[in-house]
Length: 198
Image 1: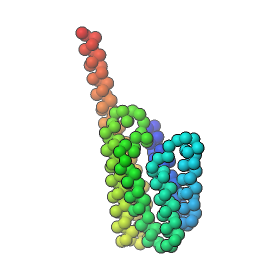
Image 2 (image 1 turned 45 degrees about the vertical axis):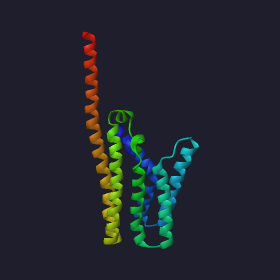
Image 3 (image 1 turned 60 degrees about the vertical axis):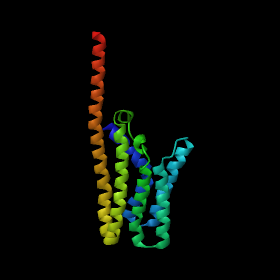
């Protein structure tokens, strides 16, 4: 459970400005406040990391750019349809970042990287696939539904799909990781027994 919380915390940290932007916009409907809060949070996070000599991950830069671009365009167009189409662009940008091989490694503990590196890479691509699917789904729903209906469906999908994939990944990696770890321990003990009997 400790590993699960560590992974979730790191991913939420990297996506914090985008999540704050969407949450505030959903609650208040005020694009100016939502964009300003998202930008301030993103700049504060990036500034802190740069000041402490820590690397800034691609998802953090994408969050900043996405909030700034989507906010500016929404303010300029004052078009409600654009607000509903924005998440598709953000999903595509995040999906492209997730196509980087091994992007997920920083979110996982050393034991997972050691025992299931192939699953870490594979699930990175699954996450990218979820982002691209969500972009297409959002586009279809934005064009077919009212703004209120779109908001309800996409809010449920955005939260539910990510939580479901997160737990599927966690359960899969934990199960296979334990199996591989035990097999490795068993083969090590067999080799030790052979060495002692020789």
